[in-house]
Figure (cartoon, rainbow, N blue to C red):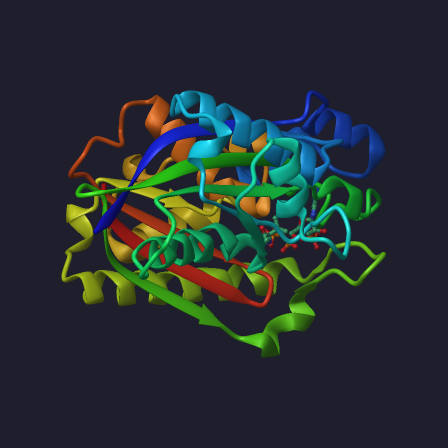
Amino acid sequence: MTVRAIGYGTSLPEKILTNDDLAEMMDTNDEWIRARAGIGARHVGGVTSEMATEAGAAALKDADLSPADIDLIVLCTSTPDQRLPATSAVVQANLGLTCGAFDVNAVCAGFTYGYVTAYGLMNAPTGPDRVLLIGADALSPIMDWTDRGTAILFGDGAAAVVLEKHEQGELLAFDFGADGNLQPILYCDHDGFITMEGREVFKKAVRAVTQSVENVLRKAEIEPGEIDVVLPHQANIRIIEAVAQRIGIPMERNVTVLETTGNTSGASIPLAMAKAADDGLLEPGKLVLMAGFGAGMAWASAVVRW
Ligand code: COA
C-alpha cells in the first residue's frame, strides 16, 4: 500500500514585515538580506494552532472531504501554543475532528520526519486511511527583534496536506539524522529567544543535508539527475544553492517560497509542496525529494515517487 497527497492548504498571517521594515528596527538593509539569505519579507503575528487550523481546513476543502473522513492528525511544530496539550489536539477540536492527534518536534526537519511517520502508520496493520499532516510554526514570538543575525531570517506560517492510502505515491527511501552535540549553535530556551551561531549552522547544514541527500538517493537507487522536484527546507537560498550544486541537481528543480516567507521551520517544506502542487509540478510518477534540517541539529530526507 502506498500513500498519495489529495489536498493542500496554507496559512500565512496577514501582517508582513519587509526588509525595509526591519531596517527601521535594526542595523540592516534590504540589499544585504537578499544577497546573504534570499529573503525579501516574512509574515509575523501568527499563532500555531490558528495557522494550523486554517491550513488544515483549506486542505480538507481542497481534497473535498469532511472532517469525519480524517483518521489522524500529525502536526509538525516546535512552537506549540502551550507545553501541553499537544497543539494538534487543539487543531483537532477546532476542525471538529474526533480522530487521534499528536505533535512531531524535529524543528525544521519536522515535516519530513512527520511525512515518513504518517506513511509508516498508514501502512501499519489497522493504520489510518487518511491523515491530515500539517507543518506550522510561529517563530515571531520567540525572535529577539534586536538581533540582526536571527530576526532577518524567520517568519510564521503553516501548510497542510491530506494523505490517503492509494496505489500511487510510493516512499522509495528516507534518511533521518541528528547530532545533539550541536545543540549550542541553535536553540531556544523556554521563555527565551532563538539563539544561533549563523555561520556555524550554515556550514553544518550544507554538510549534513548534502550527506543525507546522497544517502537517500543511494538507498533509493536514483541518480541526482532523475529527481524532478526538490522541496528543500527554506532557510537560506545560499544553503539551497550550495546543496544543489554539491549533489548535482539543477537549481531550477528546487521549489522555493522563502523570498516572501523567510524560514517558517516546520511549515517551510509543505509551503513549498503546496506551491509545487499549484504550479502543476506534482504529477503522478514524478520523483520528489524532500530535505529538511534544523536545530538539534536534526535532518531528514525522503524520496517519493509521486
Ligand atoms: N545586516 C547587515 N549586515 C549584517 C547582518 C545583517 N542582518 N548580519 C551580519 N552582518 C554583517 C556582519 O557584521 C559581518 O560584517 P563584518 O564583515 O564587517 O564583520 C558581515 O555582515 C558578515 O557576517 P556573517 O555573520 O559572516 O554573515 P553570513 O554570510 O554568515 O550570513 C547568516 C549570516 C545568518 C544569514 C548566515 O550565516 C546563515 O544564514 N546561516 C544559517 C542560518 C540558518 O539557516 N538557520 C536556520 C537553520 S534551520
